[in-house]
Image 1 (cartoon, each protein chain N blue to C red):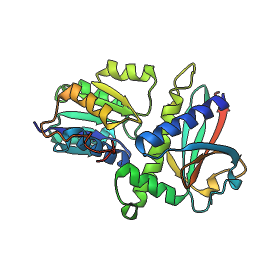
Image 2 (image 1 turned 90 degrees about the horizontal axis):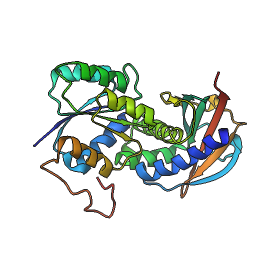
Image 3 (image 1 turned 60 degrees about the vertical axis):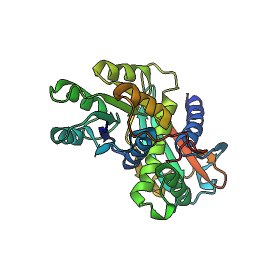
Length: 141
Length: 151
C-alpha cells in the first residue's frame, strides 16, 4: 500500500535527508508532504490525508511537543501515528513525548535501517520495497 | 565541567560525521582560533546556544569547500549544484546533531535546553579564544566552546 507521510522539520536539508531515508527504507513511492514547523503542519493536516507524521522537536513557531499535543487532542488527527526525530535524547524528554502520545522516538544521528525498523513497527512494510543492502555503500540512496 | 562537555562534543562529532556525513574525522590539537589555519574571512560558521547546569554556546567554523563536501554527502547532490541555503542548512544541522548528541551524554541535574542554530560571521568570533580542531582527510574545522555557570 502507498502511504502519505508528513515530514515536519525546520531544517530543509534534514527534510531532504528524511525523504532519502524513506526512499532507501522502501517508502519511496509514498506521497511526501512537508512543513517547517508545527503550525505549518497543522495547516497541511487540515487539507490532506496523512498516514504518518515524522516531526522534529526543536522548531520555531510551534515546536514538536506542542504540535504533538495539538494533534493528539484533535479528533480528526489523533489516530495518526507520530514519530519524533530529534537530537534531544534525554530519557525525560523521550518519556514526555511518549506519554503525550508519540508512536516512536528516534534520535539523530540515525541510520536509515533504524528509521526503517521504527516505521515498519508502526505502519508496516511498504509494498514497493527497495533493498537498502544491495550496495557496498550502506547509504547509497 | 567544560572539559567533560568538550570531550562529549568531540566524541559526538565523530559519531555524527561517520553516521550522517560518511566522513571519518580525528580530533586535533587545541589551538588559538586565529592560529588554526582556517581563514575566518571566508569560512562558514554557525552558533548554537544551550542552557542547563552550565550555559553557553558552541561555534562550528568550517572552510567553505569542506561545507560543500559535507552538504554533498548529506544531501546526495553534486557540490556544484548546492545552494547557499543547503550548505548553511547542512552546517547548522550538523551542529544541532553534534550538540544534542553530546549533551544527552553529559550527567546533569536537569536536562539541557538547546537553541536553534544560527549563522555567524567572522566578526562574531573571538579569534583569540582556544578552539579544538577536527581534522578530515584533507581539511579541518574548528569547534569553539564558551560556557558560564547557570544562574
